[in-house]
Image 1 (tube, rainbow, N blue to C red):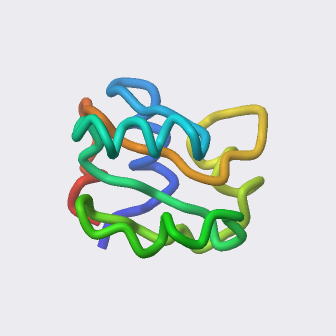
Image 2 (image 1 turned 60 degrees about the vertical axis):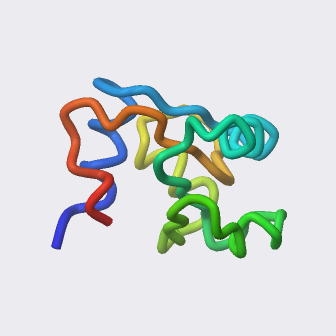
Length: 91
């Protein structure tokens, strides 16, 4: 079992991620997203049902997800485009 927060922070620092629902949908449509992580209180219910990419439900709120990936703001959803040195794709 991997530490979600550590993997998210590592992916954000060494890889490539996009944050925000609009950006995540754009990454899914362009087939660049390898993993989508959504907060428990994400306001877009269709995002959790997306089947074209692996979706992981984060155990905390959007404030917790923002803190876990090293952002100073709330993050409802993020898409991992490149994992960098993290093992986030094994979630």
